[in-house]
Image (cartoon, rainbow, N blue to C red; front, side, top):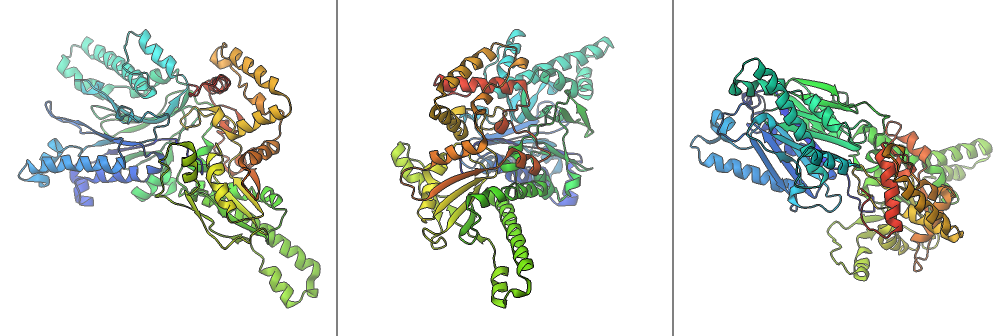
Length: 633
């Protein structure tokens, strides 16, 4: 994605189901769990680079000894930082004991972070909250092990204010309004209730308080805790947590908006945000890694037993399609095929944009994440060329000379590496004009492959969200090659609506498709319609949330997608650009055909999977009209 979009976080959880001696004997290392956690987090660093954290719990630790460990960082290279600190602590403990890491009893009892259960998180500070307090895992501490709670998640709720208010109504005084702290306290409150419920059962049976504590740990119903805590949540989430005595869980929203995968064998229980991470690190097949069903939780007891529990009523599946287009690692075999299909489905509109002049067209991609879609587009063009070759040969048959036949057979797409991002260049200048000058040099281009004034240049991108980088940098850079026409292709459809489930697209006015539609309304003298929609949006917010309609859809109704694309093309072409510029977008139909299992397309269609989405869409439009530059939830 050429536009910088902050987005979903990554989670990793590991439960070791065997004693340490087993891993030392089989794998030759006492830190098997730590090594696997580092790899799982490193393989998901694409999901968050603004912060990282890891927590671990030792089982069956005697009172007076530490059993929960946590390390977080919001510094540069946070993952490297936290593991460096962890091993520094381990080295310090090792120096204070004469047998060091050869003494297994000492390691199990006293060496920090040599744990039985781990929870890791990679964070994107989506809305500017980069303070260390917002870095997961977050914790809620208590002297009773079964009341300690450590949590991390990839989530966003549209109604966190309502959840916060419910805690206040209970008499609580939460110290922060953030969704992270609110959800922690929400689940923590229900965990306290569950502790009290089990305590009363055994108290009535005559057990002493000391005897009751381990009985509570054995009999906690985490599924019930999660059902009560989440029953009013509206949003997308994949949340994982650990309780102090060793129970752990991961849960997923009813529509399956956020992804979660797991793998279980006799040695480990593993959870991650992406399937290929588990496949690679534990050397297992695709079929061995399962997707956690929507509305369900994977519960791992301190004993190591596992169970899948339904937590909420399952809704219509609306898995995030942006996961497939951009966010997830393309090494997943299904994602790779889907991205290729996205590119292939754009073949005809791209050929139309260059007037089917393949001989005078160069095909490329930008940035690197668009490479898979590019392969699909090239395949589509190759298929078109091969079909035309066949038709010519069949038509002319033996009338073709050898030279003519060789010329026909040699036809193929002209594929070149045109733009290369300069990873070392940072746009650290804040003054607008100076910064724009610097942005123009973020990419280098390959000279000498475009015939000036003759060739068309087609470049494919994952998506075009704001259009800022295209306008300020990419189109200007490509224009230096002096092509006759620049065609920028988006493998995703026009991004028309804000997201409220974890992706940093919270302000409607940032989206170039929205700005183009508004400009078209103004061009056609329909500016009054914009104000009518504004009044309707305000009226909708007075309704109960489940009755709210997405009024922003009315902005786009007068126009077909091609009209909006044409307007976007005009908006991105500045006066100093010599080449003709055309933007080609994926169709909704093409998206669904390429990614049939991921129908969550609300940012393209306005069809939100939860009622809160419609409310957020309307509020974002109201904010735009009133000049309020904040997110809508």
